[in-house]
Image (cartoon, rainbow, N blue to C red):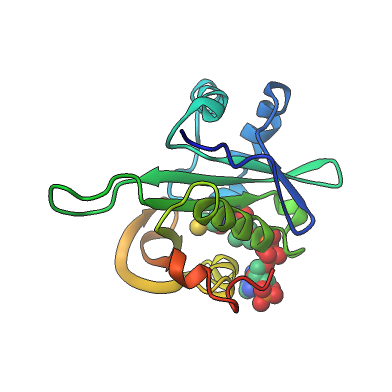
Length: 190
Ligand SMILES: CC(C)(COP(=O)(O)OP(=O)(O)OC[C@H]1O[C@@H](n2cnc3c(N)ncnc32)[C@H](O)[C@@H]1OP(=O)(O)O)[C@@H](O)C(=O)NCCC(=O)NCCS
């Protein structure tokens, strides 16, 4: 039995499923060029995007959510349960991958940090995951600040491992944190 982690509060944010009437605005945010500058997947088709979000509440691997602040939708968070690497017998469903997009109108107000914290709380709380990873472009200082601010460890610097439509081959970072690390008092000073 998988527990739906939403709705949940994270700092000033309400993390929840989007309503069907919000998906057009969410799609516009997903395809906003200011945000896509930092995303590997730039444009997402509206029907595919809509179908994916409508399937989230019934999914046992996709725990994405939107973030509401003072009644306004300001961001979306991605949280996927995956299997890591391992030999036969490996316990399944112990890893998560997180990501986020904040509406550019609201950048610099701590929303990305609060959203990422809420995703980690969900991953290690109701979802009971063991390890969570997140990737970002090396030239995305705000995302680096978020991930390092939450105590995630940079485990990989991929030199020119990512193709960027405007910039060509660019570097990427991968971060990770274990539940045992997140549970330590200093990491949990919400
Ligand atoms: C990355 C992103 C989520 C940050 O969201 P945000 O709500 O502005 O983040 P916060 O306000 O929580 O700021 C996080 C930190 O980054 C810092 N920061 C913000 N913009 C910055 C910039 N341009 N350069 C350097 N640091 C920056 C903030 O000062 C803060 O640092 P602090 O915690 O030490 O105070 C947002 O810019 C975004 O959606 N970008 C496009 C999509 C994206 O990059 N997603 C992540 C892909 S991995």
